[in-house]
Length: 352
Ligand SMILES: [Fe+2]
Image 1 (cartoon, protein in one colour):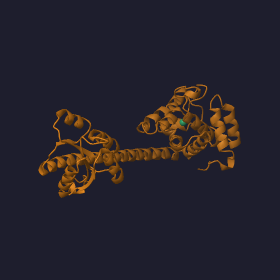
Image 2 (tube, helix red, strand yellow):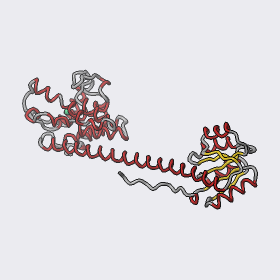
Image 3 (cartoon, helix red, strand yellow):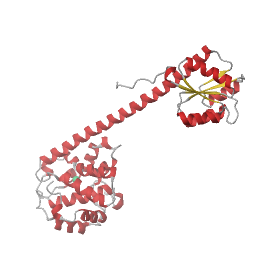
């Protein structure tokens, strides 16, 4: 069980109290009784004056108010206090014993209803009960907020640890293969630069950065012989490699709530605008924009790095190819944004 903060004090000595009554004798008598119990007391002769006093002193623990007063009566004051100072307890005071009035006051949020005249011992007992209840409500809220913060922090930590594990897996996958070393980091950098040109920022940029980094994580489940085969793939081998987006999405399911864009990238980075991609054969704008961006970055990096089955192209030749397939395979806007973001091939993060 985590450490929780101490409960707010219940004793009267820590409390302020505002006494509201249009009869000065009644008011003074209540003030004397409460001061004797350690309260710091403030006074007001009407509901309006009470609100002015509260404006000056800020929130008090307790308001004890007469029902019948000129200007603003007790019910009006009760409602105003509840609206402006929801943590202040209000005890209503009346010289007339009316059950309906008492019930009405309690329904409107009064903490208690007292009848005049009131003895010292009864006032002490009722005020103590009201303040104890108020302290418990505040304590409960404080516990709840602290627990919520701790649960949130732990959930974030769990996610961080999960991500670290997945990123380490991605590095391990690339470390085994000289051809793809650094591929995911470069794809991530290309995708972020492209996304910025397209107006992405903040959290959505973080999703693209991570999605770029993890887009091929599902290849962990593909046999190495297939992954690194120099020649043409058989239908069965192609089917095996085509499963990596779905497998990757499944691996990253713990991110589904916090980072759904990462999952969209991983699943859809091999879709094509003409619907001939995989795994879902999505067309055009049905393909999530984040995945279209990563597809451009992925295609460019694949062309500019050497693979077992072909030599690399120069950045200029790769850009020409990106433009050739824009509109059929790749999103033309994403291609142009990529070219805008990385106009000088010498500044490409090829060595990352
Ligand atoms: Fe891929």
